[in-house]
Length: 289
Image (cartoon, rainbow, N blue to C red; front, side, top):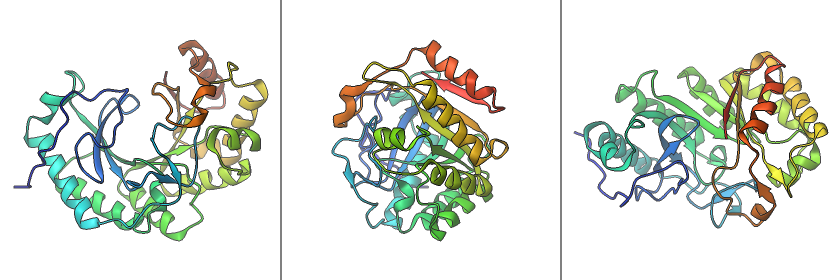
């Protein structure tokens, strides 16, 4: 039998708490995902809190610029096996998850930075795909990668995403703005929209790809007509027919970045109006206020 983990939190997990230390592990952590609709088993390849972007709404404390550290794949495998055993064979769900949400929805590469920056990213994907199969998790538990997509130019990143696609997984690809200035303000990088569209198209050819978009008020102002038009144009440049859809969400958790003072949530109706605008382009949109 797989050895079980024992270091658990004292309270229940919640949508508002995505603390990567809740399970006391280095690489594996549980969150209650509003977009996935249950427990997401996170794979954190950035325990050093390093990312090549600096998103204004990021909830990671002490975020620094950089890449993932060296990853101990043996430890990652042991942690994932142990935690899955606790979820499937133990009483972890009953202790720490609210009734009605006690279901594993996905194994997701996410965490405290850009996961594809890990040198062993494709090896980590292969490992998680293998464990998913060995535990018999099936189609009900998706394999996911949550990424800013900026490193798709690297062959090893494409290799990892291809492996994910071959395992019927999916990518949630971050696109928060469609102009050079909006991308720099929101994501902290000076990146041409055409470059994001190119990487988005590349990703969609390798694996089922959803666009993941966070929208909010900045200094009290909702996204402008110009900003929304540019965002839509970026999706069109990537190829609407290539995309699975858009996951549109708001700022439900507090940002841990200095830019937090600029941010306020949009109303559910405002997000729905933006979603309807995107749907008119022929895309499925799921909204999570």
